[in-house]
Amino acid sequence: GGSKSSSGGGSKSSSGGGSKSSSMAARGLVAMALALQVIGTSSVVQRWRAAPRAARVGARGLYMTASMETGMAAAVPGGEGEPRRSPKQAVAAKTRLNPSGLPLIAVVGRPNVGKSTIVNRLCTSNLRGAITYDEPGVTRDRIYQDGNWEEHRFKVVDTGGLVFEEDPDHLFAEQIKEQAMIAIDEASAVVLVVDVRTGITTMDQAIARFLKQLGKKAPPVFVVVNKCDLGDDPAASEFWKLGLGEPTACSGIHGSGVAEVLERIVEVFPEPIPESAREAEIASRTYRVALVGRPNVGKSSLLNRLTGQQRSIVSDVSGTTRDSIDAELEHDGDYFTFVDTAGIRKRTKVEHGSEYLMVNRAFKAVRRSDVVLLLVDATDGVREQDRTLAMRVAEEGRACVVCVNKWDAVEKDDSTHSAAVKYVQEQLPAVGRWARPVFISALTGQRCHTLFQAIKEAAEQHSRRVPTATLNEVVRDAVMWQPPPKVNSKQGRIYYANQIGANPPTVVLFCNDPKAFGDGYKRYLDRKVRESLGLAGTPIRWIWRGKKLRQAKKEFVSKKPHAG
Image (cartoon, rainbow, N blue to C red; front, side):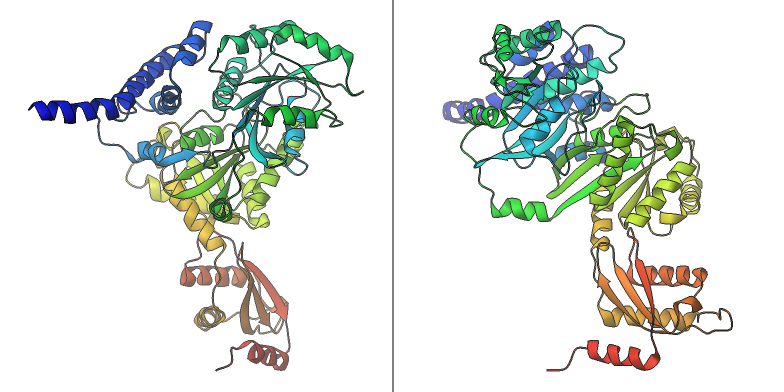
């Protein structure tokens, strides 16, 4: 008994005590966060910062799960009497954010000081940078980008303008502050952007006091004085008064001073992490997924559910999400990059300015994606704008999964599901023939865990290549089952088929005359090929080419593999 107590008990206290104490601390922080909605008063901030880092990291994930589930006990792992996890709780357990583990630079400041311009300079983002526009409040959520300086690689997160005073003109001030707090807590360095033209304002002073209250556990802070277009502006020295160290003058528009900022930041970074073969492999097999839909259909709520944290600001106000938001995560051994986009309204309702840039950014996200999650509101049904977006997805040749959100708000009986599937297929003709409908609830997590598998299946079919012999056999069987009808007294004949590309699968059909095949027969052939080959979740691009029989036979024989 003595040896058991001294050896077993000692090992238990030494190994399990640390994790148990941080787990208890995390639960306490979760309870505090749920009661005070996280980061509400200075006392809450002090308690949050005083807690161990392991407790803070655990508490963030537990807060999201606890706030979305029915009870906190089910969200806290490792507790006594823990109930069996539901599939939606297992999503968070299998998901790991930011698989790269690179250092993070958080860029903060008051509204309209040029934070997004500085972020684009730090990342040299010419192709896909943060949206910049001369109006406050364009950025609201956390926007992550990749950057590098010399041998150092890092990530930069852009945040919304921080406002500590109550001001009705600043929408989502509390949510933006919460997003900025999460970015600061994740960061290895913080960049405070100020404006040399306006000098020190009360907002700048409030943000500086807030950063200094974080204490020794806070990451180092670098003051960047933006809009010094004439180089080393003497007025930048005024910002010594903020008490955060030496200010660095720079210009986000012209790029002057940005190198000096990066030189100072990388000094506090650990040793550079070289890009490994594993990272290159991960990048090559990462599923890129765009969340697209009308305003207020639940795109940001779904992103938060899939990532297990408050990744995007959610509200009942249409147009809450402005820029496209990337969230990288690992789930059950697979890697995903989810892109939350702004709600897309009808073209006649889109105003010129920042909204025009947001809609264009959303369409670019569709083109860059492997799979599109097209969200539809189950309580509103399919609208004309949903059909327009579905047509855009099909024209871009993207794989698609139709997510019918808010399914928990629909009254159901035994035939509801089958009737809803038929309704979606009929109302979304552009993608309804091949896109899989999934009926989910981002609020409760219903069936959200099935989206990862649906995305993988759609992406695999999107990049699939079918052997020429198999493809021709399927086409020949389809023609034998239903020969093409005559069009203008002309009988259509298909000689052979050949797949010339993937992403999406692209098939060339050589025939006597493309005009001899009507739209109805083309749809029939598309459906039969899908059914025979199992090509679901992806469009097929058909290219019809007219050739004389003799020329077609000659080309077909030359394409056959020779024996030996």
